[in-house]
Amino acid sequence: MWSLRLLLREIGHRFPGFFLGFLAVVAAVALYVGLETMGRASYIETKRLMRNLGFNLLIVPEGTDMADFWAADFASSDMPEEYVRRLAQTPGMSADHYVATLQKKVFYQGHEVLLTGILPERSATDASKKAPMGFRIAPGECYVGYAVAESLGLEPGDTIKVLGKDLTIARRLLEDGSKQDARIYAHLHEVQEVLGMAGRINAIEALHCLCVGDSLPVLRQQIAKVLPGTHVTELRNIAAARSQTRLMVEQHVELILVAVLVVCAAWIAFLALLNVRERRQEIGILRALGFGSGHIAALFLGRAVLMGLLGALAGFFVGTAVAMHYGPEMFKLTFSAVRPPYDLLIPTLLVAPLIAALAAMLPAVIAISQDPAVVLREE
Image (cartoon, rainbow, N blue to C red; front, top):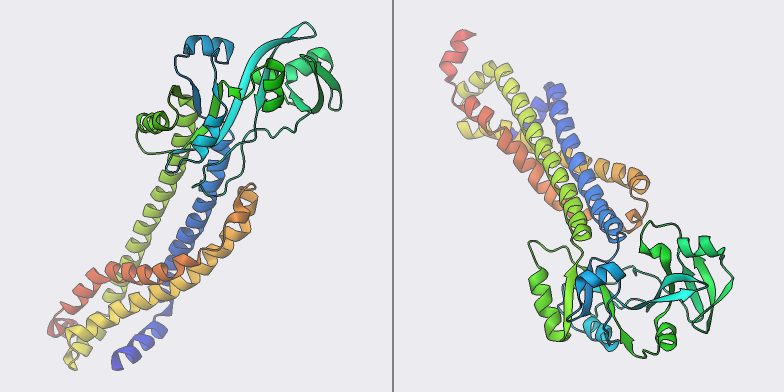
């Protein structure tokens, strides 16, 4: 009780020093909570943006000459459409967002176009609910690539006849600068019908997870067991862009947090050391009055613990408020899914006082090691 009363009196007597330490803890905790909250939003946002780069995995029939494939942008052989359902229903796969496609080059009004039939994606049965990728084209409709639409003067609402099939243009795609500009997309089953290839596809596009290390061989083994007679290719530029971008974001956040922690601890230690130097005579008197080393240490460590506890509590709410205020402006796509990080409150209230106490440990040792006779003689 006496130690607590002395502690409160000491804080009141030297409140500016205590307040500066308190502000340091508030700033550190607020920055940590803010960055952690922003980091969660950034992770989701980066994941969404990198996902928008497109599929990074391609499954084609075994024996496909990949040189011919990249030249033509489709496989000359085919495989069952049922394969995409089989993939989606197989648990434990390190891929998701499966889209079955059938592509052939055809002529439309004297222009060679890449007729592409697609189905809406199928997600893995054991995957969490995710936003769909790719196009969702209704039967009887089509999407026309920019180059095709531009050269033929096609607009949404026009009706075109492709291999005898009437299709209404539902969307004129923006210029992409890729082979998409020369495509006409339609529903897979209608493309199968006009090509006389019912129930067949020549590729499955998918999204490979961002796993640590080279996981492609493992995925190939997984798919080979489920889909015999297929070949798996990873679009490494897209996969590498996703992986490196997300890793960079995570490392930068961790680096900032470590730097803030070190600076905060050093500042608290410096303030505690100044407090010890200012109170040398008081410490000598307390020792002469019979206060032991434990009481003296409790005063300094208790001061640091109280500083850390109050600073952590205030810093948590400051950091949360700042993150929730500025987050929606920074992460427009996904921040609405992020909630205040109440799961960080208890760990913060435990760790911040501990770090503050550790920072004040050396000054406390200096305080209790002083000889009261020497100190009072100086006075």
